[in-house]
Length: 274
Image (cartoon, rainbow, N blue to C red; front, top):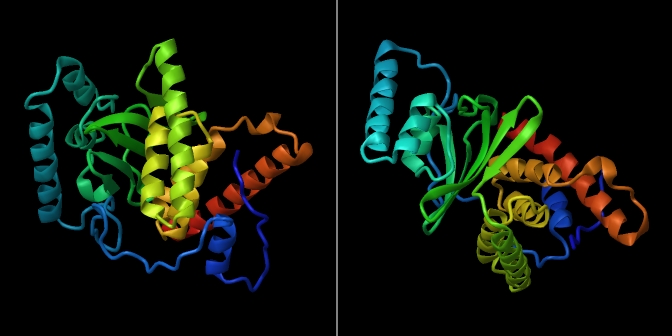
């Protein structure tokens, strides 16, 4: 069960106080903003997807994309090669193939790496990479391959993940629940990076679960990673059937509080990452 605390709004409340309130009752730890961590990429101040100003820049970007396409298609399976040709990101693609399918370059993404796993979100949401289906929200890489793909389409965020049999789904949900409990224990031990790793893995195993998305969003928010925190809050709200939730009883009241906090943080973070 989600355990958000009451969000205390105030005109003069400090931003740090908001984050601490959002993450209570977890132990608090003051962290300075990272300079370069876990695959973060340096891009120009105007944004990686801004139109190149000169012909030389356009040629350089095109050369980079041509190199990425050559690497992506060098030894791909027929179905993956067909998806790249269509400009459609598919489950099972490696990171280079993700770039090729979305006709993007690495600088267009913010990539947080965890061993053989990674989480890719647009560096600048207002100029996010896209494929023929929709605008990219988040790509979760597991064991070097795309395992969960979130896009923004006409009807909102769409999530695609690896197909599983009925028994596999039950096992995956149980494993995800165990990882969430382990993550909560690591938060209590003040190991926020370890906790985030468990929530990441849980969200890959059970992409429809709201709990790991919300918990990951809170930690990312605290660690001053606004791009991914924003996407995680949006995924959290997507995971809920909000129109069916009625704030009756303690459990639903806490869920309604989590929804309100997520909506409020989305508005704040959208202003930061534009």
